[in-house]
Each structure stands twice: as C-alpha cells, then as structure tokens.
Image 1 (spheres, rainbow, N blue to C red):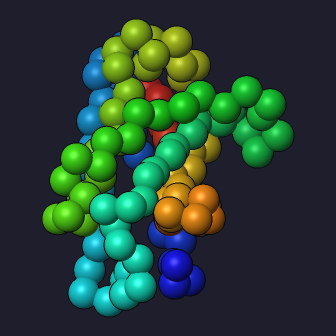
Image 2 (image 1 turned 135 degrees about the vertical axis):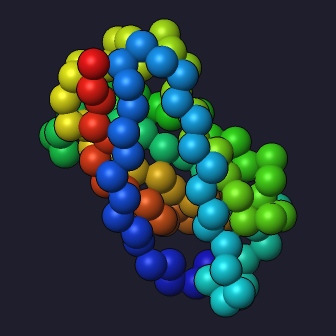
Length: 111
C-alpha cells in the first residue's frame, strides 16, 4: 500500500439523531498500487487519546469502486455520546492486514 496522506476534518453530530456522511477517498493517483475492492475500513470515537474503550463507527464501503465510504452513527448510539469534543479516526486495511489512518479529527456532539 502506498504511503497515504492523513487528512484532518471536524465532524458535527446532533445528540440523539442519526448521523451519516459519505467521504470521498479516491482521486487519480492516491491509491496507485492498492485494489480498493480488497480493502476494508474501520473507524472509532474516543473521548481522549488515552481512552481504553473506543466506540466503533459503522463504515460501509458499498461504493468503494467510486472511492466513497460512508460513516454512520445510529441515533441510539449518538444519544449515549456526551456533549463533548470527541476524537475519531478512520483507517484503511489492505488485503495484507496493514492498517493506515486516512482521516482523523474532532467529532463535536451538540444538543
């Protein structure tokens, strides 16, 4: 897998609502030696970098051939998030189980 640039993005979610966000991860030369059909993605929310219990975010790669993944958090999960600036990370995992962070930032939960 090529060395991937990690991007920073602030995300916003209203507490107690469904959250869904499509993210474009592919451009002309970003993954020159990676077959995206053989990759998986994972994402996590943490209250701090020292959190022992990250919360997994649902990641769908149904549109991966178009370079799109979808992050989603159902309303029952967002209802349990504190009104706080959480941290999140999104990883790509290749067919050899090599994991690289491709997106990270702050997930701001508001009332």
